[in-house]
Image 1 (cartoon, helix red, strand yellow):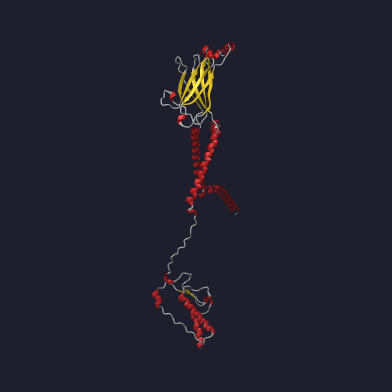
Image 2 (tube, helix red, strand yellow; image 1 turned 90 degrees about the vertical axis):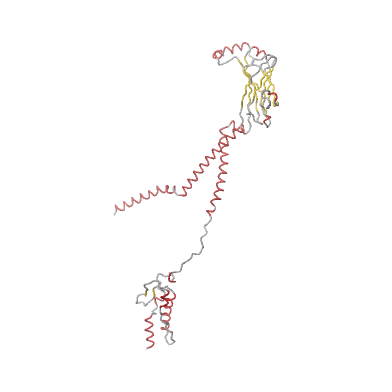
Length: 386
């Protein structure tokens, strides 16, 4: 017996351990948990999709709001007799209205005696709007103009020899040239009015000097001066990307949540209504033979205490047979009968009426314990007559 009890104990422990291990899995696979998983999966997909939309929106806003920081255009000077070197350059359609720009001119000049003897010279820069004739920049409206002086850096003869002696290896290898690059600021924080006609399309450069200048290269440089939000987005690109994208994504998720709650309330409201119980009347068919099945013994009638109950073999009685049954006449009541006979006759009449009007036998009532019956009535009536 101890071995059997030990085996039962081990089996019970194994079943308990199995139930303990499988209980989380059971909870994780319920219908409510599955609906939660599906909702979380759809929410994750929607979040990723809205995050992609937020990133795309930020990039689109960045490239449309932040103009090109700077660009340059080369100017090919024309050296004609009896005129100063000048040339025009076409500007790209990348300038933005209302954006301040710093404009400068860069000249690469050789360190010749002629350029050093020229001393100061003037740089004249003019910006023109769109013109009807492409080759004639002056036919457009003059939008901005500036003149600035410039000169090459002065070195004494002794310093010039020392400088070239120390830089001789670089000159020999071609890493340096006997030239100087002049950077001259022409316009500071210049802005252009709104409208495509108010944006410069051409730039005209002219070098004014009594001495013929020798130039390697000339170009015009435009540099945007950012301020406010443009300054933050351009100089702190990663921080602005994270903050603005997160802000835009949070707004998207907020509206998505509101729309989801609205649709959930609208489409699931009918399912949450309480079900009204069906109060329609149920049609009940009458019992066969006109009898009700309220009693388990509809065809049992009371008898004497020492006799078996009276039963009928056939539970159904046709109406035609009921009409042919001759019931004995009721025993008349006599005034000479004593109180006991009257009570017995009354009990007999009550039993007959119950057997005729109701299918219930009346077992378990006061009729069963009464001593009234056909034989007792006959005996009592015979005593009264004798």
